[in-house]
Image 1: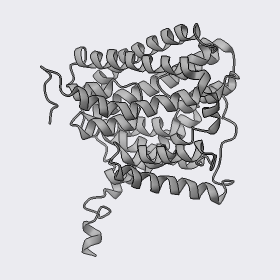
Image 2: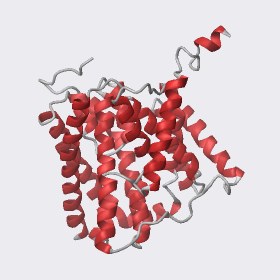
Image 3: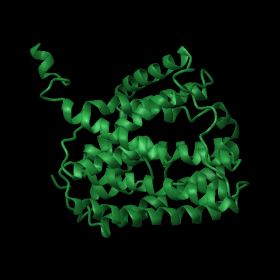
Image 4: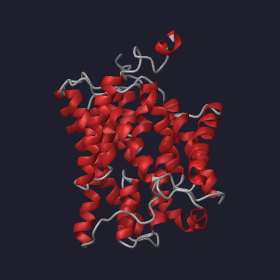
Length: 363
């Protein structure tokens, strides 16, 4: 009994009441965002409401232990974006993938410099805030290396919110198409037992192998690699049920929102203002690269805008369906972007080190 009380789920370490309130608020926020047909409703809705609650000093909280299993589920979902068809078509994607890599470098360099010089943040916080993708991953990496996790989380959350709430609807308005739910979504009501087996298997094996190989953010990257291998090899084409993904996004949104407990409102508003500037930089690079690459590839600017958009794999894939664009092309570029950011960010940070004259991160 004493071990149970002092364990990770003991009352002294697991804030049941504060977490229960945070989940209730997150569910309300997700439901509101979903009803309003806003993008990434369960994650961004939960994050928005819990952030507001935290800023208003409501008794909300989220223990760190709940994040790893949710991250593993998201990793499996990201890995399911790979398929044998990607390998068959990837030869024609060489120019666009090269453009994507250069695009990511341009975004990273300019946005990191923006947060360092304009925002005045320490090097670690600026570096992981300026990466063009990976909300959960960059928060994890940055926090492990001494950066300000709350700043990184809010910067990336703002990026996702601004991009997916403007770009899809801008294209919808310009093209005159409607955004509907993507076809082929798997529900828990019709998911076969094999889907659950693959989901749990990829998550468990992926976490184990990720930790064995000492991969960065192993609870996310390990399951992602395991799921990608399963799909690329043709062993299965399973998709995690959307209800499970929604729950994972809801919990992650709650965890991120509760990070802002105790943060002054003025600080949050300053970060949001800076995020507007960084998002404008990203969108300018996206438009420029989409135009240039469209001149050297068989893909039009519209498809490349969707593929290079710095946020919203699900939403960009959804509007690609509406526009009769090549969904695999759009999805693959987003998966590659997330994968490259996850792999390269910690390695580059280690190689570059702390630039001369940069102050160490604040405690």
